[in-house]
Length: 106
Image (cartoon, rainbow, N blue to C red; front, side, top):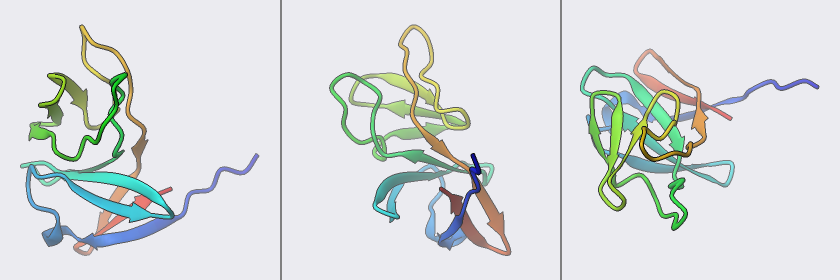
């Protein structure tokens, strides 16, 4: 099965403020994009893995961890894994930054 990814332009790096989540829609999917203070960019499905669900874009970024204020969960931005003692995972998307443009792979 061929699983090629298509990268979509999400905007310029400057459009993504450091440590502030921003929601974009690509191919009908709601994606939360986070830029860390060290200028790494991460893209995760904007869906909380908590049983009650909800968005994750409102989370607080510290380092490469997203702190979810709603459920007090911590999510690793690079893997989407919820940190112990809680468990779950958020779908992540590959990101590349080229010449000041942010691209997200679906």
